[in-house]
Length: 76
Image 1 (cartoon, helix red, strand yellow):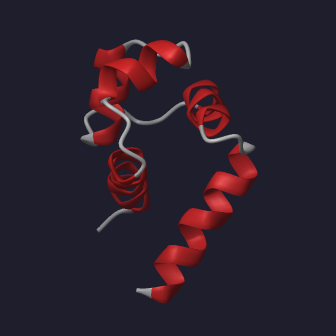
Image 2 (cartoon, helix red, strand yellow):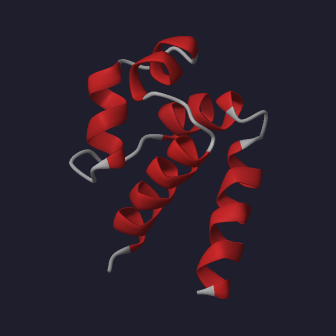
């Protein structure tokens, strides 16, 4: 599985685990819901600007979010 595909699945998984609905999370963080959906389903390569907005939604920096992702990948 490609890195981007794994990251997409991870982003969807953590959003769902926190109980955030796609539309409300997207709007709250300045992302079009269709963009977030396409990112989470690996239909759109994630841009750093979108990653920044997603990370902010979790009170993290993009670097922290990617670090958490990498740690999870290493555990699995």
